[in-house]
Image (cartoon, rainbow, N blue to C red; front, side):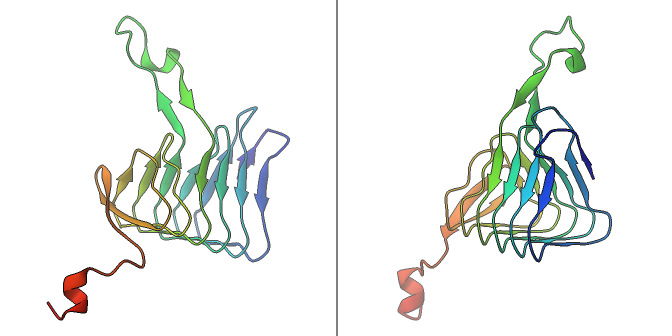
Amino acid sequence: MTATSEKGIVLHQGVRLKYGVYLDGETSEGYINIGKNVYIGTGCCLHGHKGLEIGDYSLLAQNITITPYSHKFDDPEKLIRDQGGYSKKLTIGKDCYIGKNVCILYCADIGEGSIVGAGSVVVKPVPAFSVVVGNPAKVIRKRGVVKSEKLQGG
C-alpha cells in the first residue's frame, strides 16, 4: 500500500484483502476509501489518482485492475509520458460484483448493485443495477428484470 495525500487509504470494518492486493493512492490528491465488508481478491491492483471509493458489501474477484487515469497522446513530437493525462475520482457503488480479470478505466464509475462480467474492460459509466460484459463492456440486462418469454415458459 502506498499513499501520500492526507486522505490516504481507508479500510472500513470487515474489509478482506487477499494475497497480493496493491493499493496505490500515491499522488497529492490520491486516496482510496474501501467501504464496510468489501472483499478484494488475490492480485488486484487499485489506483486512486484523484480518489477511488468502493461501496459497502462489494465483491472484487481476482486480478482486477482499476486505473482512473488516461494518458494524453495527441502530440507525436512529445513522449507520451510527458503529455500528462486525465484523471477523476472513480466510484464503485454499494453491493457490486466485479468478476475476475476485469479492467476498469478512467471515468468508468460502476453504479450501485451492478455486475461486471469476468474479463470485461469498462471504459464508460455503468448504470445502477446493470449487468455488463465484454470489451468494451456493454449492458446486457438489468438486475431483477425477467424477460417475458421466461415467464411464459419460452
